[in-house]
Structures are given as structure tokens and as C-alpha cells.
Length: 153
Ligand SMILES: CC(C)(COP(=O)(O)OP(=O)(O)OC[C@H]1O[C@@H](n2cnc3c(N)ncnc32)[C@H](O)[C@@H]1OP(=O)(O)O)[C@@H](O)C(=O)NCCC(=O)NCCS
Image 1 (tube, rainbow, N blue to C red):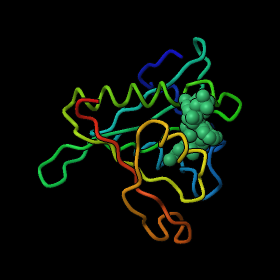
Image 2 (cartoon, rainbow, N blue to C red):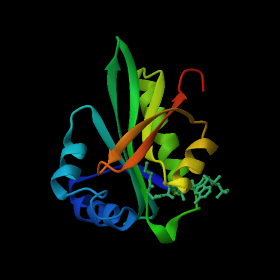
Image 3 (tube, helix red, strand yellow):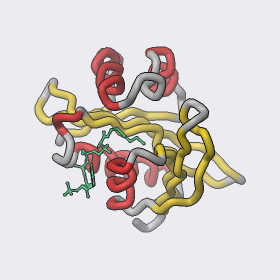
């Protein structure tokens, strides 16, 4: 997969892709997607199977907690028919490289407790569960918090 920065003209495709990945209410509105893409501490990467054919995208960013710089994975979305072909893994690796280069020491994320495929994907990539947030999604589905060290990895 070729990994590149997301561009403004990708917006409609990224929005449709997110809608295809998540149930209504969990998938983002255009305003939410626009916010995450424009937030200054975030970056967005796109995976292309071939030029012009987007297989998936990732949004990640940095935050500071008790003076420590951390990475936060906001989402990875891979087109359903393009899964298990390494697009997700390539996006995650590229995001980790960016965050490591920025000085982040660990990567954090939240994943729905019923999203077993994403949990398996993250475990395969070295994440471990650190906690659980009650009702994180729509007030009724819990999230697992997961974390992976970035230093020296
Ligand atoms: C999770 C997701 C991003 C994975 O993307 P992907 O491109 O299919 O992942 P990869 O091909 O890089 O998978 C790498 C490894 O992760 C694990 N994995 C990925 N999907 C899996 C699944 N459905 N079940 C079990 N393990 C899985 C496997 O070990 C896989 O290696 P293998 O195919 O050799 O067995 C993708 O399924 C997706 O977009 N899901 C919907 C959106 C979502 O839930 N995103 C996460 C939000 S927190």
C-alpha cells in the first residue's frame, strides 16, 4: 500500500468510507470528521492500493498528559472489501513512525468492547488493554482503552 497525507479533496471519500465502517450514530458527521481532520495537533494518512483508489485512512494526533507527550489514534478505517490486505497495518505503522519522530512515548486508543476484529488487529500490533470506559459510545456501549509503548519499538 502507498501511504500519503490526506488532502482536502479526499474529504467526500473519507466521509463515505467512515459511514461504511461504522453504524449510524457511531460514524462521524461531516462536521465531526472535519473537526478531527483540521485539529492542529492531528494528522491524517491515506492508504492507496493504486493511485486514486483509497483503501483506508487513519487519523492520529498528540496530547500532553502530566508533561509527557503521547500519541492518540483517533481512527483507522479500511474499506470492507479491502480488509486483511495490510492497509490497516501499513497505516498504523506510518502513524507510529510520525508520532515516534514527534517524541511521543506511547500510543493510546479507545475501541468498542464489541469490536472484536479491531481489538484483534490492535493486539496483533502490540497494544494491551489498560482500562474500560462505561457507555463511551452513545451512552450504552463500553470502550476498552488500549496502549502501546512507542519508545524503542
Ligand atoms: C481494524 C481494521 C482497521 C484492520 O484493517 P486491515 O487492513 O483489515 O488490517 P490488516 O490487514 O493490516 O491486518 C493485520 C492483522 O490484524 C489482525 N486482524 C485484522 N483484522 C482482523 C479480524 N477481523 N479478525 C481477527 N484478526 C484480525 C490479523 O492478525 C491480521 O493479520 P492476518 O490477516 O495475516 O491474519 C479494519 O478491520 C477496519 O477498518 N475495521 C472497521 C473500522 C474499525 O473498527 N476501526 C477501528 C476503530 S477503533
